[in-house]
Image 1 (cartoon, rainbow, N blue to C red):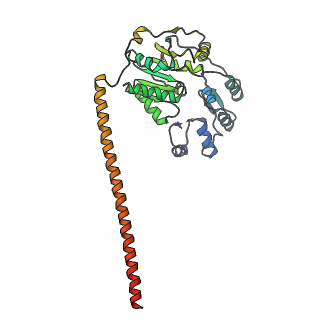
Image 2: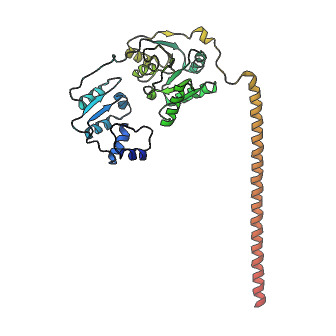
Length: 344
């Protein structure tokens, strides 16, 4: 078995030359290597498409269709998808021959042991409220979902400054960086993971106590995938959504249609609202830190002055050297002309 993820192209080509029984690949990379004639799929008789709806979202469906045409005409195909939009139904009809459909649970079904809470919080107050929620020791292992990569980084920075142990994963992070973050979260050295929807389905970590929706997702189906990171394997879990009534009404209605239930809007509990935000730097130490930073600034300013003085001195030395050389050349030229006149 060979997995393409996180491996250099040269290593992949070298490994495949020896032959493999099972190949796990992303459609784009597989098509690249097929076009370079590094792979021959004509004798492959089994095709498994996992998370087909995500391939659709990421624009891989055309590559999947091309790959299917390169396989042996007598093949067995299995297609797995958390959702079945029209495009995936059409793809299934084109790729599968008299398929047997197996539905584990109806689309949009949420695990019964997940407690869902929706708190009305203006966007401008979300970071403060989130900070207060996380002071509760019950939130031991938390995944926070944001709509955007920029939002994920901003939340991670804010929580890190407050003294929390945080890691972020999203599409701009390298595969190695995402794996390190997941490993740290799985092992417990990081208690909070901030992620975007593109990473939601790839997170399989046991013991996640809470999922927090910092923003509601653009695609309502992702709400189900997000909160499904907690309450796994028939355990209980908690899902908290921070909801801004002014800007997220449409998203909330879409989510409620998918999960086929109304989420009760609640105000922040008084015991949470009364909690202080976690602060990394105690109040007594702030003056000391300020004095320290002032001393550092003065030290750096002094170093800059020395450097500038050195540059000026070097510049003036260079000018004097050039002037001396010019004077020497002129003196030599004068002596040479004088000697010629004397000979004449």
